[in-house]
Amino acid sequence: MSSMDLLQYVDPLIGSYNGGNVFVGATRPYSLAKAVADVNGENTAGFATDGSQVTGFSLVHDSGTGGNPSLGNFPVFPELCPEEDINNCVYSKTARGVNYVNSSVSARPGHFALDLTNGIHAEMAVGQRAALYSFTFPNSAATNQAKYSNSSAGPAAVNGSNISPLVLLDLTDLYDTRQNATISVDPDTGRMTGNGTFLPSFGSGYYVMHFCADFGSTDTSMRDNGLHVNYRAGIQPKDIFVTRGINAFYVQAGGWVRFNASTSADDTTVLVRQGISYISAEQACANAEVDIPGVVGDWNMQTLVNDTQDEWRQKLSTVSITPGNGTASNLLTLLYSAMYRTMIQPQNYTGENPLWDSGVPYFDSFYCIWDTFRTPFPFLTIIDPEGLAQMVRSLIDIQQHVGWLPDCRMSLCKGFTQG
Image (tube, rainbow, N blue to C red):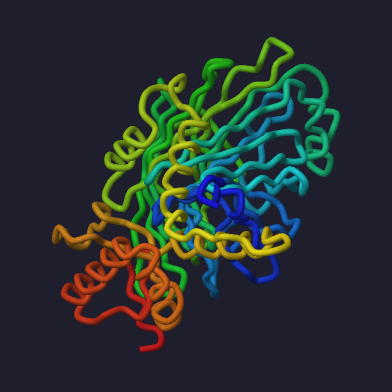
């Protein structure tokens, strides 16, 4: 068994339907970055194999929780604007959903990919606190008619020559809890930075998350960029502050970057490097540059995947099995997939806690200790005692600063739910 690659037995899609609420995307052991497609169906953990529509791709999620959808902050989304008019793109999350091709969904440790029915291919990988997205646009807009067949633009509007690829960033989260937010778009580079104030899934209080997103392509050059608000977009201004709005009306807003249309028959790939931080936008940029260094030509999806898979192999290698008679593949898949899930969260936020800095590891996303104390935590004492020791130190440190041991904690917020 020792010579076999244990990752072949990890199936992240187990439990991705009918209320399993598991995270199926790209993650490292206990990492903050967790990238996946977000859907408008069973989206508590972002994605589900329920045939619903993709509304964005975001890099922070929880796994296996009940209750309201969690995190999914600052999603990005690839589009093609009919008739080359940026106002013909669909910016509203409730309207821009696109179906995915069921047979195209690929989920394995460190990597997630799928095809949208409009012809765009998406894949993603992560570092500890940043994600790299790759969106490949088909070379002919005619293949994208299906998406716009029910829109006011009509299918005829997307016939003909190639259309400029556009990627938007949305100042929202999965459950639309954003209270206020800011975004700035660099007119020269297209870099987007900002933050938002959000509510936790079922804790008390609020949290502020910051982001930094860079866009690039080795196939073509950037054409223009700007902001979108509700259903309209423009190249000016480059900065905006939005609130919940009058009578709690939800103002939808964000940024966009558009690239020049391809002049060849080849498809066009746009890369997005996005970092996240609970401290500042500057730290989000630093996180992205550490995890995914260099400029767009240096960003390598396979390198990220390889590094992530090496981490997972090391974590899973603490348990080895000698199969008995007959096929043991199904049992091994259940075992190693379950082991993999025990090390998705809690998540290591060390260095990302704005509330205090005591030099002690800080872990978050404890969902929820009234369950986990009798299931994954005893198991981790055997397979990952070092990781569990850091969690215990973190819990003691939380008690010393908050006054109580949490029975649940998420997004820096208290969850005194079943005390």
